[in-house]
Amino acid sequence: MAGAPVSGAAPAGPSVSPAYARRHAGSIPALERYAFLGRPGMGLLGLVLLFGLVAFVGMKQNGGYDALVAREGAPWDIAARTLGFEISAVTISGQARLTEKELLAASGVDGRNSLPFLDAAGVREKLMAIPLIKSARVMKLYPNRLVIAVEERRPHALWQQDGRVSVVAEDGVAIDELRDERYLGLPFVVGEGAQKRLPEFLEMLKTLGDLSRRVKAGVLVAGRRWDLDMTNGVQVKLPEDDPGRAILTLLRLQHEARILDKDIMSIDLRETDRVAVRLTEEAVAAREAAAPHKTKKTGG
Image 1 (cartoon, one colour):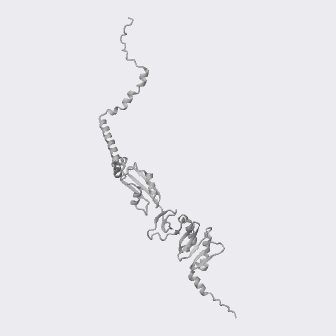
Image 2: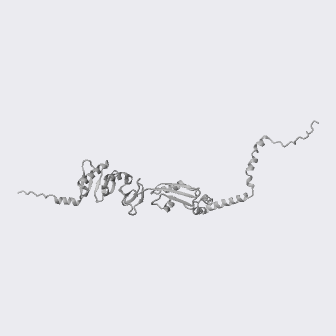
């Protein structure tokens, strides 16, 4: 019969517009993503986090947080140490004049640090700020070991500037003040910039050979040329250009005339065609006394 329901047909559902379907297509998956919030214990966890946040803000405002960090370290360091990443062993190698205690203090590493959050590059920069340190390496070995390897600068000479005497390395870096007699046998230079010209001065000492043992100090004059102060008080003035030639002249004069053993104050080798020698006051007086006296002619 026309208009009669068809036997066995499914009942018609509610009609849904395409626009509505598009708007609400992602609602069910979104709810599923946040379904874990309804699990048992999540409310308690949220409450703990809330109280923790409130406590953190309160500590931050009244200074308690800073005191905690100063005493125990940053929160992330505390958490890492709790998980077994504390720095329980520090291995230091390469030091000769610095002690392990000095190196640790300079590095800033202590019990508040944790290995994962330790800034190895920052530790290296702190170590390199020590004048005696020429190079440094910092390595983290998990879970809880730190390795520090350093190379120290070696004392190479003494340098005097403005009345202060410093121990300097081969590259001219001042690594310490002269505190005792351990370094008194090192070459000695004086004057502004003299420590930067150590290779030049040491080459002159090498040219002098055995005579170098009689050099007390090398004095850089006006940043241009050297004077050699000898152990007996004689001053040898060297030229700005080709001081090696002047040193060979000095060696010849010492060999032929023992010039450095005479009563002189200085030897001026700055000119290529002559040598100027200044006598001591005693030598001048003795020379005048030994000179023949001139007789005066009287008129008649």
